[in-house]
Length: 489
Image 1: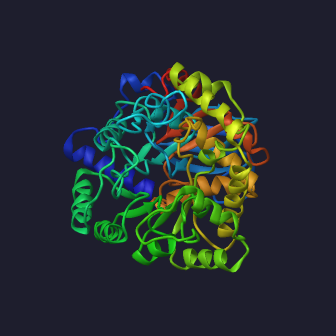
Image 2: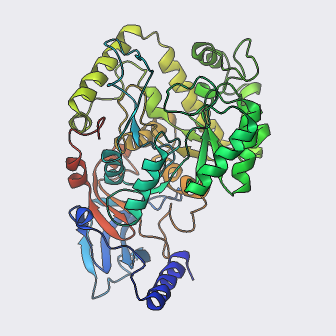
């Protein structure tokens, strides 16, 4: 019996015993975004990219029943049930719901910067966008997210609760706890850990509150990181890191599970005069990576150690693309979603890139792409997410689609990029038996796009309908609902 089928049977049993509905019915707020809401749905004549890395299959039928994929197969061999709502998807492709592994619910630019983009007292303050971000993620085909660092953990936990209860539209959420940070955090919205004992208490407190993962940040000390990892592992939870004060080899020795952004941007082991528990200047760290060869012995040893210790790496290419002049391509849909102030702030920041660019950003981006390709070829587990931060030009959802495009630019095939963004994330979260690929018995989390992203990855931007647990959401309507809100709400 499949996991989805077991869940469905259990739900029925509980419903009988409790005399109540166990799966939350969509609220009026959610229903306004539904375009498919039927007990049985047949998607016919679809191209299927199943998320395993296998080639696309043409003229397929998918039967969705009770929130699950009941059957899949060629149209010539699989007839839709008589009671099904039949949807003809000729010219469209069905993908698994994407699993975003670095997907914040806050926006980092504009309102607390001066005219040159510098922070003003009390420092950089970031706006929670708990209304617009979940809608954009779902609209763009991301049906599961890991928040990967929280500034308003109670907000994030309540958003997850409301989504799960059918009160608001959004993806399934793995809520990451507040940042595990050391002294002098980059924003006063982060807590600075003072000792290993406090790190353990911090992890236990937030695990009890409901968070399901943790993220260490740039100034954490080794002793505090080690204590946090031990406490998280004792609860069956994982820890990732955007590090600087601690090098990647040091963190691996402490048992970390995942690294964010890739080593070119966050591994300080090659920085000259690196001091223990102190992060070097970013320019020194990044400059040190320009001097090493991905095919050379130092980086190859790092890759071997990552693979041997089963430590994942999360690719977040869109946020670093912002530093390259002229990138990413400006899109009307993105500018329309942004508040007036956020749009003006981002365009000003984009203009400054042209002035200060010296070619370093493009070299770093290409080197990070080369590392990620080599890491996967060596057997490493690469995850993906947009990291919607930086200068404000990476938006929830739209940034996830851009990450897929950049993975292909890095040298992955489109179906490989989709696997990274679906099956790999699901596997890391321990949910591959339920989500991440398309197969009978799995949850009906899938994305319908117009075109063929297995040949042209940019077609992932043409999302028509997003199914989550068998309910089909109208992508265009969700996007329209956040027009002018990103950055403030």
